[in-house]
Length: 309
Ligand code: SF4
Ligand code: SF4
Image 1 (cartoon, rainbow, N blue to C red):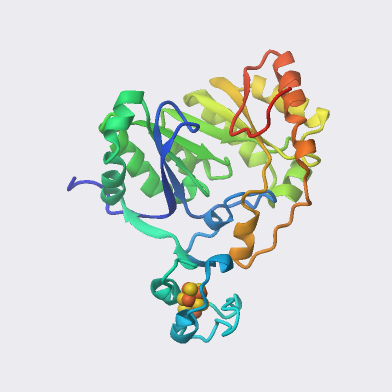
Image 2: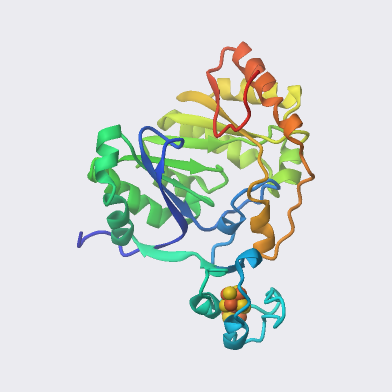
């Protein structure tokens, strides 16, 4: 363990026993920090590359401890809401809150500390051919740490995967792809202008990186289906045409839209910017799957809570 990089990585969460994000049973590591801002992002707590406080008001028991300890007077004394313009994310209120109603998101790990965390579940990986998937946020944003971590995992015979939005300098992406047995690569829209409106960035660099990544590593394309935003026939067909130009694509995975992360925006003092999307609209995902497979692509719907009729 002594010669592992001392590089530290900021992690927003570690989830164990996942069965959706790569082969077998896996540990998911969510890096904190992302260069794009998808309107539908269900993990807004992973967007900023710094520690930040969240407040889940419905858990608050009104003890008032947080307001007393806050050095900046940023906490209102009746509702215990945070004035986000004053708060500097020092975390003192989270340390004292007895019910985790206020919580600091983001913890720094060394590679050794993270390895220790995932090694605890080695028996589950071994029995299921599973391993570790690094997601986010965007893992390439902390490429030095992630690269060292994945390299060490491979050295320990753990299967490795990353999920990337693809918006990164090639050298940064390459540093983590080269130690990944599988890459989940997200594609959101084929029209650059619309992509910019939906995520804040053009798709040019992403599509260029998709081509290079798929020439060196097995790739699963992930396509979040956001009704009314990116699920036109034109965009679905353009996506299929593009994917067919890529080399090592195993399949396309369609991710159904959900609004389960909406409450997190409020807890972070942020506004959820997507319009209300009905469950009925979401069911079109089955038509989209049929259309994509009619072009000869292997396609699956994952994380689905709809029942196909
Ligand atoms: S994180 Fe620090 S500054 Fe922000 S509300 Fe809590 S105690 Fe106050
Ligand atoms: S310390 Fe926690 S439970 Fe107590 S008032 Fe603050 S947020 Fe609510």
